Image 1 (cartoon, rainbow, N blue to C red):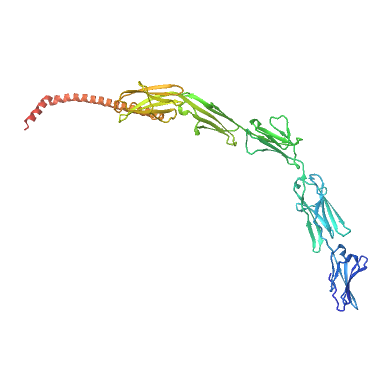
Image 2: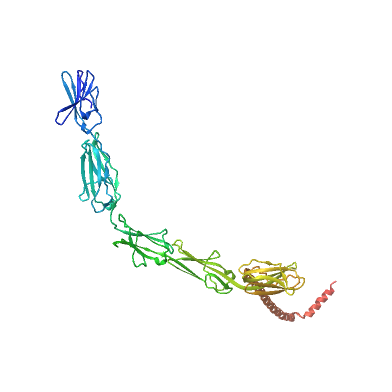
Length: 541
């Protein structure tokens, strides 16, 4: 504290004192201007805390609340005494306020002690304000109730301010932040210190029950697992529920989840859950999709060539399903129909169906069709220009017949043969010979069903001849027959044209002879004319 009075030149000494409540002064420090000595009075509360400089500035260290006094600087000369007072104010910033004794939880509709906000060791005393989500809480009777209490520590004179808050919450107060602050005065004016916010568990009863189906897919099919979850919107949420399952006569008591494994189509229906007191409930519908496929016949089926085989693939499903057929891994444009079985009808058939709207729901059934037939043989021959003869044995049958060539009479077996590829139950065996004399060849075809034998006479002549068209494979047979029919038709047509032309010519010649008779009557006898012509030739030199 500087001495407010200007130091006079004739100063003898200076003193500091402070005033008490009864206005009696208490001297605390003395300094002589001549001796340059400093003396401090024996005042216990200022022992070892004072310092007086040469310009009579008084310093007090370790300030206390009790230092808030009126101090006076005295400057004494031979003729006069000068006094100037200095009033000292002492401030102490409070500690950061904190909310103590917080409630474990709050309940809607109930006024309950939320907590106490305390700010310690301030001077002068501070004031406490409560906040919710940053907004100041104002007292509301029966809803927001505050009480303020201030205490002072007699040993140091510092104040502790405590404010308690009673609060009746609503559901909206869930996760709300409550805080408090202390406002105090310091050397620079008013200031505020906030506390850390606190969130309280606000409890409220369940007002709505919700049931949900927990599934990895949007649709449910047979064989899936279903988990039902029932929940209430209260806090704390209810832990037990009653589940109402289709087909069950009594409600099932359980926790918030109910699991059904490997469900079947009869699980389709309406599911419900409720609180234990059945006061409120919720429901949901579940559809368990299914797909059944029946193929008649199925498995491995053996039939004889030419027989009829009705095939049916029927489905039963929870929704419209698509059906398609495969044969030997190739998709068929239409369903198979066999009124007269052929060898090419044999194969592996698959009838497959699926529900496009239900992931993973598809079925398939297989039919392995075997078409059997006794061996059928037809022999053809052809003489080439080099005198060799090609003999072909056309064979049809399933299982594939074994073919053997022999020469009738001698019984010799011909091993040098050439076989075509076995396709649709047909193939051919071919030999090439150049016989020196007429022979009879026998072709024998045999499978598990029957043994068939056919013979053909082969002459030794070398004139090119074609016994029958050479059928390279079974698929060309109809083409060969059609070509033969076309040739026969052309020949018959030519013969008819020639016959008509001959008739027309005969009619024409008959008419010509009749006309000649009439001409001879007019021009003379033909014999006479011939004689005249002969005479004319003779008379020429």
